[in-house]
Image (cartoon, rainbow, N blue to C red; front, side, top):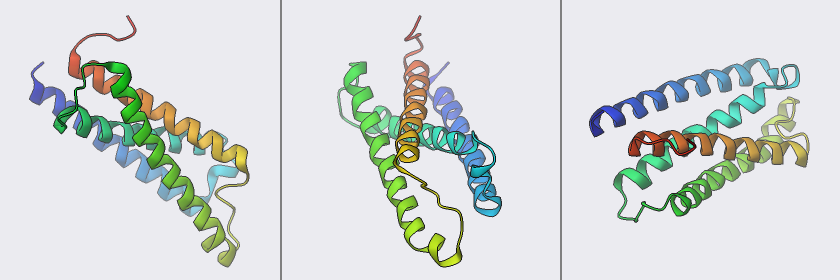
Length: 145
């Protein structure tokens, strides 16, 4: 597979993931299924981490002048960026709970610290999956095999 075809395939995966996340978030905002469907929030955060991981991988591995031959260093750099994005999202949820949720008596987006830590772990899991996909596609070799 040529580089252009690989990058197009990764971009298509990213576009589908963004669409699915947008649908999940729209449904979540409208119907609040987080309280009734246990995996809803998990899916949103894994997918969000996956999207953040693909975008960061694309920019770090595709455009930067950073030496990306060492997988561990590359992984730590990208997963750090994913963690930063995930933490920013958690601050967003916290601010929503302090303002909009209180004003309109909506269900909280962050019921407790355990939920926040679970969300962060799911963001990192999604980011790791994205890094493995991008790295494996980019290098055309299996990392785990």
